[in-house]
Image (cartoon, rainbow, N blue to C red; front, top):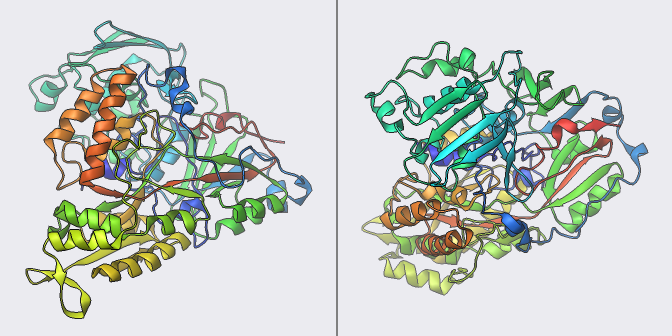
Length: 595
């Protein structure tokens, strides 16, 4: 399986927490037919939430015109807390949030899905995080220095840092964390090896017993030297830290298999500790008294992972938080509850149809373009969502500083253009109106998660594809992990996914890099991708990303579908909750209180 990609499309950036509502057949945004894909790389490992120091200066990201969220442009405060359900009123030290069932692999850099990363984002802190403009800011590291040649990064850790068992967190733990990601047996999704730390390859090949570029200077200071500049280096290096004493106790070069036995008993340094994981029901967390910012103000945090109706969970007080599509109907219904605060939100994500490029018909760019022209994305993702969405054509959100529409084909719904492309590709109408080529029918096996929005997608796509002469075979999964398993087995043509929150433009492009998507390995893309990372100059990067967006917009290694407009609704008793365009709710969560 393309581990890097499948992990990328599913989680969160450094320290982030994009809390998703319980999956159900309602219109909550968490069940929107394009779930966060199985966890990928750095995003899922909290390792690639990168914004170059210059990337967002002046608030460039925030300066982009955000798509307005339905009928709500400003936060809304609960009007009548007396309507709060008894179940929610009775909780004085516990907050409950819905989440699609994680796999239990809660160790950073080893997640099996993005939902594992949601849990891990509360169990582990990072050396570096980002603020609400995407600019790197200190977390476990109180400061850092970067050499003039942009190759050496020196991190200065805060004093008296501790893991959740009270043991000290030092530079040796950071060195261990970086080192194992270069081990030849490492098969996780981290993007750290792509930074090319000096001596990292030699360690991986077994010709060196340590990594030359990693230097522990003293217990609070560590430096790392790269072979070439990389605009994402600061936050990629500044990700989570694993305890060497705990995760490295049984480590020998070439053997990381033992770490899997530690997944369900994580030792972190974040605001919460794992109390108990009950698959299919809940993940129970308890406040970490050793957290460097101080023990969180709410003692218990629970992810409710059982399936059910999100509206019902919120209305009955079974959960304190949920996210919904920003339709006028949803917003008015939420206001009518009386006891929820509402925040409009445009995530820095994009939805897409993953295409199986190993299947013969889909190897042809013209077929992928025909599918895009022939799919009424406006009806599916905008009109049916009552405007709580927008059509996507590039791998970047409109709030990104790199976003552009210049030279981008919008692929408007055009059946005749789609038919023309299929004709050019040699697919001609056969028996029953289904197109054929070399004796094979043009058939698309689609995978989607069970939801109202998936139902809408299937209804429209079936009609669209029938008009094109394409046989459409949808398969729906109530269980997300079962869908992932099907994708890993390669038994599909199209599958709906969405990305995690994206800070640096490189994150939205990772899945197309170096053959991560099987069947797509374009040298021109690789050249441009590396060029964009080789500088921290914002204008130079913008120019390269524009070229990259034009390239993937033409080649369509995936079919871009939509941007979401969302609202967060949460129990009006919760105080100090804030949301960042780049790190979601995690930044404020340790300060949440129940009044």
